Image: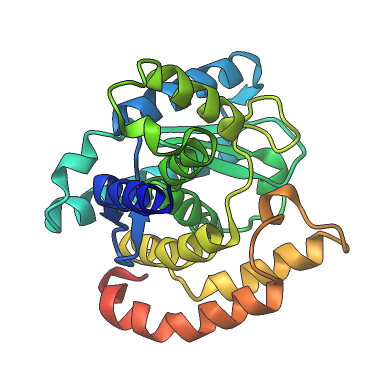
Length: 266
């Protein structure tokens, strides 16, 4: 029995081993991109049916403007690094939603939503780029796929790989529903792990830099986010690294990021 479990675990690792762009971290992805995109689009569409979308005004324009630049830089990077097949997974949308929460998210496939509660503390395109770079990084790194895969393994074990599991898609849909959690207290997306948040911080700095924004504003932005919370951690930051750890990590990574990717920084 023990040998079988070791063998099954090895099969799982071999079947779904992948690498995250920009960081090279190995990850376990057992769910196809199409399954993830299908389930996330369903949840996103349901959310947008009742969301109060804002389509005019300077904030809505800023979300679209910055979102498009981050998206363009992301696609350019993927194409230039032999990952052009990944580009087809993105069908970008940029939405500002009327909600007092300090929050934003990017669903798999590039569906970006920013709450106007967040826009109340954003004072520049660069600051918004910090947030959108971070959220797009979650999608590029396939963190949702990774979380779904981990939960599928936890619930169904190695049998999910076998042809005997005729309802694999149903299982994936069930797990995905809990991961996306429309209507939950966290909005559309349940919190990522701290590991994912730290990785998205790093990747987001790179993406915003490649898009022509100044990553140095990230330090003051997260300081401002911390001050605005008045001791209460916003849902957007609930599983993020501590303020001091995040700022320290950003300061440590900035010189190398600016040197390697900062040719277009304004």
